[in-house]
Amino acid sequence: MARVITYGTFDLFHEGHRRLLERAKALGDYLIVGVTTDNYDASRGKLNVAQTLMERIENVRASGLADLIITEEYEGQKVNDIQQYEVDIFAIGSDWLGKFDYLKDYCEVVYLERTKGVSSTQLRNESGGVLRVGVVGAGRIAARFVAEARYVSGVNVEAVYSRTFAKAQEFAAKLELQWANDTLDSLLKHVDAVYIATPHGTHYEYARQAIAAGTHVLCEKPMTLSAAQTAELYALAESKSVVLLEAVKTAFSPGFQRMIAVARSGLIGRIRSVDATFTKLVDGGREYDATDGGSISELATYPLLAAVKLLGCEYSELRTVSFKPAESPVEVFSRVDLIYPHAVASARTGIGVKAEGELVVAGTKGYIYVPAPWWLTEYFEMRFEDQRGNKKYFYKFEGDGLRYELAEFAAMIRSGQQVSFKFRPEESVAIATIIEAARADATIIS
Ligand code: CTP
Image (tube, rainbow, N blue to C red; front, side, top):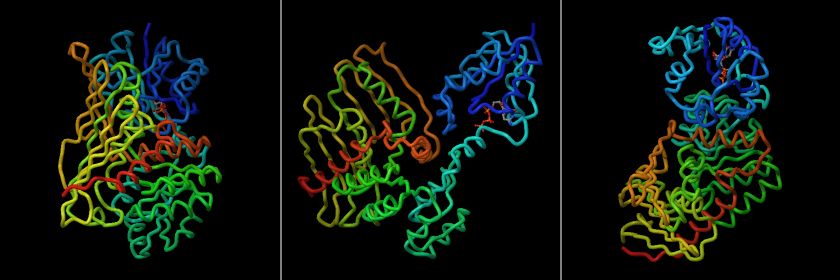
């Protein structure tokens, strides 16, 4: 009896899938189908899968072609499955031609002609319609965003607005966008959603206008430097039934989310302390702007994200010390301490002081250590007094990570969900509250 195995995501099961399974089955007598888990898809950068693992398994089951369905959870699993299930033939679509030749050491490898004109990606785009996105601002981060957006299906960045029209035109030409705009209004006419990537001080006004016009907004961090303004924007978004999301990439990355889940699972006991550091040396420019610059406004969002995700928004006291050299228009290093009823958090930021960018979450039974750069979480470790209990966790943080926030934003819009548990409006407002107070009330040393 010849056993055949094949793998896929099988999202929005289509004719291409059915024909692939039929031909795979015909190669032998018994067909095993591996369906990728959500986690595995996320870890290999396949974002925006529309159906859950259960639904995708059901798709395969309902085809009546699989004799056994298994899940594919990790890289390298195929080698193990082939041996465990004593597989004779591995079959896969021709889009993978050559990629699985290494399995020839274990079984026969067959590439089946892919069915033309249909794919899950295409169906996802058709079902929800392509989300047309415009970029506000034409700087470096905006360019990175356009590049990252290519990894998120169902999203098309089509337009740009910049205060200086020539810059918008240059940006559109370079990144092959359809429309360059010289007013925000004209940009809003072309798109369903905007990504705001202008200097901090301008976010509020752009976001307010876009939301008022019924446009979904993904806004670079910090959304504003005022708790009242941030709260007002969320309230406006709610009343207009549009999605407003603060673009804190870490919050949506697989490694960070898992770290939060592990930390809050009780495995390290009760969390008593969170220490997070983010420093990035900068010599001058926007970061040194006397009104909006400084290490807190530039960088504190990340360490404060860790604090509120791990300890919540209800701190009882805030103490800040900022180092501001006499010749500097802004503070260049700060320590923001949050005191909670049963825990403390310390967020350290620096644009003129360099430190190790690590995160330590201390609990009553053990701690979690995330090495620098912890905000691009690829790895963390759970550590105990008795080191035999230590555990290491590995993840992938793809590209610049902007794809994660965009994928979440697009998924929220598609499902009509205004709140993401990965980063809630109240958490975003809490961070804005802390940033505003820390900047206003810091004890200054020089
Ligand atoms: N497949 C096929 N013909 C198609 C689409 C998919 O033969 N038109 C095959 C793939 O080559 C693979 C299997 O179906 O062997 C499962 O593919 P999957 O990645 O789930 O489907 P896609 O439609 O390619 O998904 P996506 O667009 O998300 O990449």
